Length: 284
Image (tube, rainbow, N blue to C red; front, side):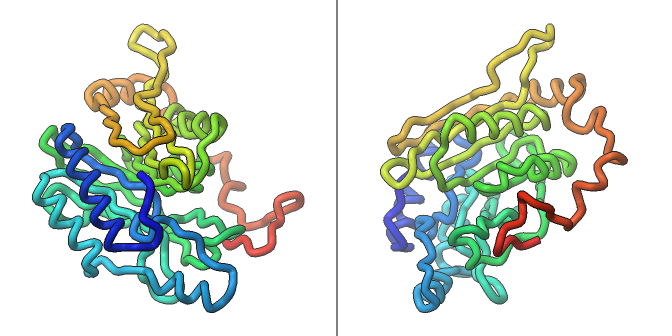
């Protein structure tokens, strides 16, 4: 989708239209692009502008969120709703997965905030969450990460270790072949399905995409894991995951957590940073 700038009422109305279209097309889950309530409008660099931008943050009891809770209940469709979330101190960049009963199953706040850009004005999240989502087609274990999170293999890895079968990824940036290939790799190495929704042109370049995470068939032949890739324009696109097939694949194949050697990974949790990776403003 393209957003209506920071007009939250207009974004709410447009989000509803697209969710209804997704429901009519048979979707079980509808995924919106990153920070939808304000259209991911950038935070101004000056202190006054920053304060005004942060004041657009909303809470889970505010009308924007409760509206989509009611819509999810009406449509019997889960909605992954994104917004600038009111928080103690600076707001968070969050996604709430609302189930088909209108209840929030999980709320995830972006861990890897872009501290080199506007998200220096946000509070980073501090954990990754997975929930069991009940749908009319059965239960599925869902995790979430947001935009820059997908560029760190640790994000999807932790979600896989916590049992995620599908990872939802709201996005707001230009998606080139490298980033899309990287996203597909997250699916491959963790044997999970991944789905990403981006802003359409002209704000960004669309290319919302999903991969099923099954790199080989039952006979060991390589296969294309791409389920769908959208173009630059607005639209509703269905990514259909075959959970029975995915679960069978995860039981027999060698990636994910099957042959990891975590005892050798201690350095991954070190807080030390050496040249050439020292950056002003980086938060750990």
